Image 1 (spheres, rainbow, N blue to C red):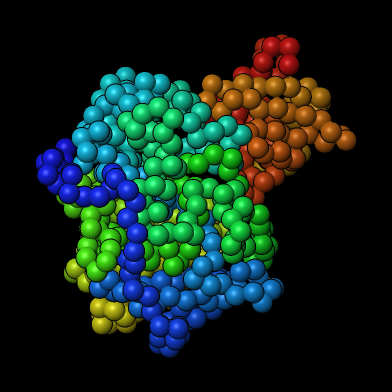
Image 2: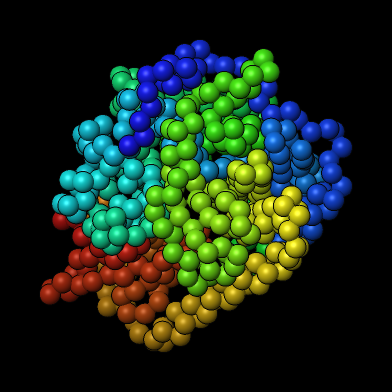
Length: 511
C-alpha cells in the first residue's frame, strides 16, 4: 500500500478546483526536418495512411506534426488535432485516477475488490476471496484475455464484469501475466463506488485529469468525440482478406469503458506525457503544482507483474532483458535506460506512448492502420535519435518479424484447410440446426435459415455459415478470424449443443 500523509494530500490541488494553465510549451511551426524524414520513412515502409506524432523533451513539446492522410485515397491531412481512438492507452487514465483516491485514503491497491464492488465474483474460490484492486490492474487474476466478452459486445462493460463470475480460470491466480481488459473496467467501476452515489468514471477523469491538463480535445467515448463541434476525425483502416488497405467504420460504443474507450489527439497526449514525466505535476503561473502526489503516481509506474518474452515477443524486443507490467504501463530496460510505454489497438487504430523518465522524453504516436507494428519501430527509432544511440533499421528488423508472424497465420489457415475432409456431409438438413443456444457467460447464440442459407447470430455478429465437414461450419467474419461453429447431436439425432468462440452453448428447449 502507498502511504501518503495528510500534509501531502492536502498540498496537492487534485481534489479541489480544476487547475488551468500551460503544461508543455509547444514547438515552433516548422517541425524538425530530420525527424520528419524519420516519420515519413516509417509511413512508407509500413504502408500506413497517416500518423500524428508528438515529442516532449524536458517540459517542452519539441515536435508536433501530422503525416499522411486521414483516409486512404483522399488528400485531407492528419494534423496534431486529429482524433484517434487510443484504446488500451485509456488504462493509465484509470490507474492515475485511482492513485488520486489512494492518496486521499479513499481507495487501497491491496483492498479486496468486493470492498468496492459487491457484485464482483471470480469462479476460482481462492482468487474470489483474495483478489485485490492491484491484481485487476496488473493482469494477474488467472483469467485469459476473453476479448469477445467486451469486443463489439451487445451488453455493457458493466455487464461484462458481472459475467466474469462464470469464467473458469485459465491459469492459477497470481501465477502469471495474462492481459485482461474487463478486469481494468472493474477497477474503474470500483473507483466509482469509492467516489459515492451518482459518480462516474468518465466524470471523474474529465474533472480531475482532462480539465486540469487542458486536454480539451480528449473524450471518454467515440460518440462524445463525434458530437464535438470541432471534430477532426481520422478514418480507421485495416487490411482485408486480399491484403488491401481499406477504410472501416469507427469502433462505436454506447458506454464509457475504463479499459479502452478514450479518444484523443497528439496535441493533448503530449500534455498527458509531460504530466507523467513531471511525476503528477502541471505548470500554473510558472510553477509546478501537483494533481497527485509523486509517491502515489510512482506506484502506477512501479513493476508489479513479470511479462515473459518468448517467441515473437522476444524478437520484437531484441534490446530488452526485463519487462514487467505496472498499472496501465509496461516497464522495460532499453539500451541501459528505463522505458515506460503502452500500446493501444482497436478497429483501424494503433496508439503507442513511450516515456524515458531519466531523459524527460515522451513520444506520442497515433496512426490509422489496424494492428501494424510501425508504432514500435518508430518509437524505437525516435528514442535512439534522442539518446544519440547507434542507429538500427527498426522498420526493416520489425518488418521482418511482422512478415514472419503473417506467414505463421497463413500457415495456420492452410493447415486448417488441409484438415477438411472432402465430401464429409453434415448429419442433418439445414433446418435441424436452426434454434437458440444459451451459454452462461456469452448469452444467446441463434442459428437462422434465410433464403436457403444458414446464419450464426451472436452478440453483435451475424455471419453466414459455410459448411466445413460433418457438423462443423465456418462463421465467415474476418474480424474475428472466421471461427468454427461445431454442432453436436443427442442420442435421438437432434442437435443439442453449439460450440463456438471457445464456449459451449446448450440448445434452449422449444427454441
